[in-house]
Length: 84
Image (cartoon, rainbow, N blue to C red; front, side, top):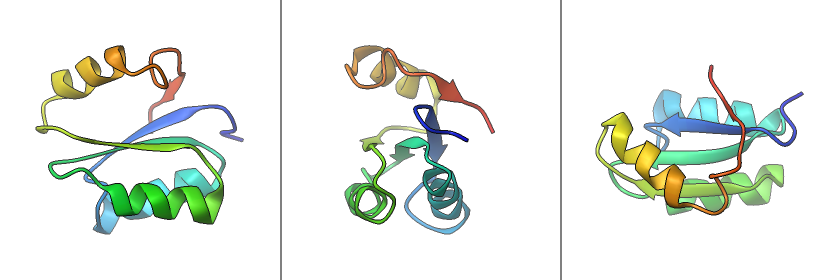
């Protein structure tokens, strides 16, 4: 259902953010994980468990930080982001 789409999940290191990231990855979405501290472990977990592409980024909670990162990332710059 979400194959080939990208989802941006904030607060992705634990709790609800992690649950949402796992749910979206389980549906086939590629995931951009965001938190104040770069969630490398969650990224690796999603890649190995669900076989999706996942990238992690550390940034302040301001949307402009994430948008700036997406504009500079070759992976995400041409991606279709789904809002949930």
